[in-house]
Amino acid sequence: MRHLKASQQRITDSHAIITSEAGASIYSVSPEACKEMPDLDPNLRSAVSIARRVQDPLAELVKIEPKHIGIGMYQHDVSQTLLKATLDSVVEECVSFVGVDINICSETLLRHIAGLNANRAKNIIEWRQKNGPFINREQLKDVKGLGPKSFQQCAGFIRIDQEYIRSFCSQQSELAAGGHKAVTNEKGCKKKTKAAANVIQQPNPLDQTCIHPESYNIAMRFLTLIGESHCQIGKSKMQQKVNSIIDREGMDGITKKLNTTEQTLQIIIDGLTQPESFDIRKDFDQPDFKKSIVCPEDLKVGTILTGRVENATLFGVFVDIGVDMFRGQVMEEEEEKKEKEEKKKKKKK
Image 1: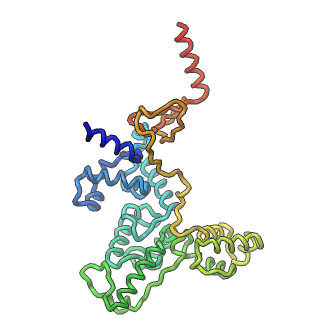
Image 2: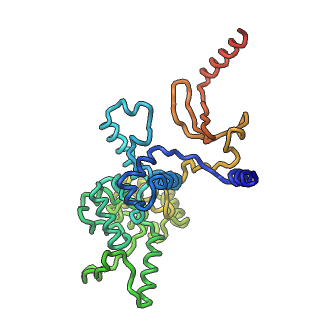
Image 3: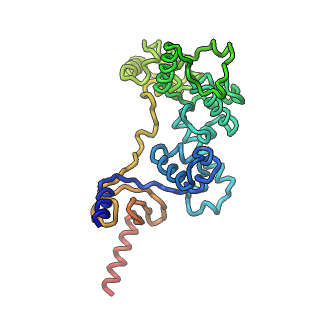
């Protein structure tokens, strides 16, 4: 009994979050899961997948076919071909908006980037395993099967974390200074060709932004115009300089000087002023780790709760409030009045 009370106390002191497990069991026995976690039992793979959804929902959910996530009660009554095409299009759009860190992303996530497919995604991962991390976007052109057109389509959605690259380059420099051979992931420790060895790849701070390589020249001219360096990307000083020139010359004046469009200039300004490792989702609702309300007994009249909408109907919406099997119902005002009137009538009878 003492152990039971101690266990209950630990549960009460813990923070918890309710996460949907839809599709996790199907993913756990998929070829992707077996390749990613070959030594784990399917149940443990499911647990890992569910936990990762809290860390980065998009990166994890793309591994599961949308039809297995449970997207509505009528999803099986519509054309499955059209449904898949529509859902894949939405996923691709989401991935493109967020961007993908090329050095840590999964093969599955890469497949959803515009200009890439299963073969190209696989080749990118193989290149990364063989040659180490991508230092800059230009190295994508060295990947087998990724031509100029594919590079043009995907480059703007690829991100290269500059902090990670600085750390990697620093480690390589220390190894070289100490007389040690630089560590690579190249299979069989084969020596690189003489031509490849002479090429020293340099990181480009613009590769961490949403700015497309085609606009790098315009971005550099804009930096010259405001008297700043691309090393100051995301810093408060950069934001001040950008605001100053916009106030002084306006967007129209700047676009004429740079001979570009206002849309392209806006993307460049966004890319230069957003902080390192910027994520468009940072302003979204964050995971709510609950502590005070974890069981039905904790619910009280008047308590304000957050939840996830599970179903929407003409008379209201059903909300998962993360408490046991309880579901909240948010009713339309008119429907709520009707229900109260019906209850009054029943009491009179």
